Length: 301
Image 1 (tube, one colour):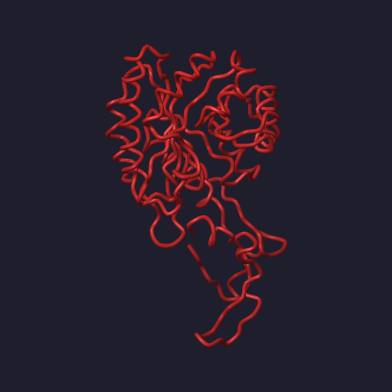
Image 2: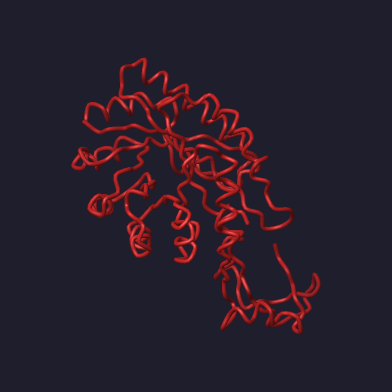
């Protein structure tokens, strides 16, 4: 949402910052978003995706709400440790990791990792007695402007063959996970992917492989930048329908990111100049696509 204030009435925001551009964090909005999503997904354990915004105040607010965290790097783990978050509340979800990254995470006490191919399984063999693994699957979301299905995730039809390799290697794969993409317009792909995972759980059991005890439905929950705020209860309705089919013994996780962080932050910047161009007046800010508004190019904002 973009609000423009005339100079004489902008002091309310400018009083909050020393210089512009600056981001202003509202912990009450953060708490409300966390509560709203928790209510929209009853029984689902939320892991905040630190990559969406690692601001310490935001991390502390979620930690105070007894939230858990999805990390993708050693740097993100360190930020959480500085906030007093125990590694037992973290899962490392980057499917592609260096050996050093894995060693640091295991040494810190993180026990859950994600893979999406056999090569990544080999990296985990030295730590197989100390960790649990989730297999990331790929699902195409036609209504998500940022498609992650090509970059990460194994085809669902490869699930059994990858789990066979893991089982033969002594690696405990007890979870399935996916991420349908960012800024999804509906939760239909979330629901469909969860249903596929539940069907795979039955196939895995029938094959005599170790049972799946958790499914991570990822992120992709949208934040609003223009127009009305997202009704999370309505958005998550398709997911809740499938949640009623989840059998006892399987926990459901989710990784909300910008749906929590974006509404919690406001960017305060100034109009520093204007110029008449061929197509009309242009107004120039002291921030732009090479600063806090890089998402205009890359993140579907």
